[in-house]
Amino acid sequence: MLDLQSPTVRGHLAMLLFSALVAGSFALGARAANLIDPAALNAVRFLLASVIIGTLVALGPKLKKRDISAPWRYLVLGGLFAIYFVTMFEGLKTAAPVSASAVFTLTPMLSAGFGWLLLRQVTTPRMALALALAAGGAVWVIFKGDVDAILAFEIGKGEMIFFIGVVAHAAYTPLIKLLNRGESPLVFTLGMMVAGFILLSLYGAKALMQTDFTNLPTIVWITLAYVTVFASATTFFLLQYAALHLKAAKVMAYTYLVPAWVILWEVALGGSLPPLTVFLGIAAVIVALLMLLAD
Image (tube, helix red, strand yellow):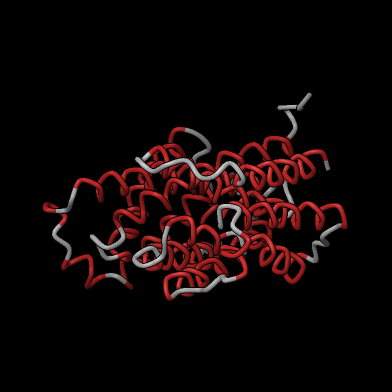
């Protein structure tokens, strides 16, 4: 049985939920990406998420003097996540949700590299085998079990743009553990959110002034609400918590589940089920994650 009191087990469960929530931002983001400037959307998203997390901090751990020391740490982390989200929505203007999530699956390998570079975290043979199995399963899911499609893999403009954000996301995970000085996940998340909002407000000032928020399509508001509550405030907290209790490569291993979740999201939003062969890839990913959970 799983020991739900174990911080390690909780870290894994947090990332399982994280992967499902992140997948929703791909499915909804693709439907809103061409209707609003990515910088404007994400500036508002960071602001609203900061309010939510700030309220929770005020009701819970409260801010302490040490929490606001070395504010440059929050600027670094907030800047990395701002890059990730802006490039994601920019990429989704032309890339399909499942294709973009394919690029996202590069995060674990990159994160393992940053984990070694910044924290000297070593990937064990067992973990390497699990990551390889999960990667293979993810690729199988992404291309719907079509070998010819895998062999003919081509990277589009949207995917290349999003890859920049994926690199930023991969660096973010080990940096959480490196830069955290004992702050609670909620407080640390708040600092990063506020910093991200400040940076995005400066970068996207023109886009913010030119956006007519009163006449945006309904899907944009639905997407904004979702990414604010679930794919920002909630996932940031989940990632912060998991990164403090798991190795960077393990944390980001859960990104391999995102393409499978994206397919389910697409079906829920009116699409059709993929071929049955796709579920072989999903099974491989689940086996790999069980290997990581048992490690």
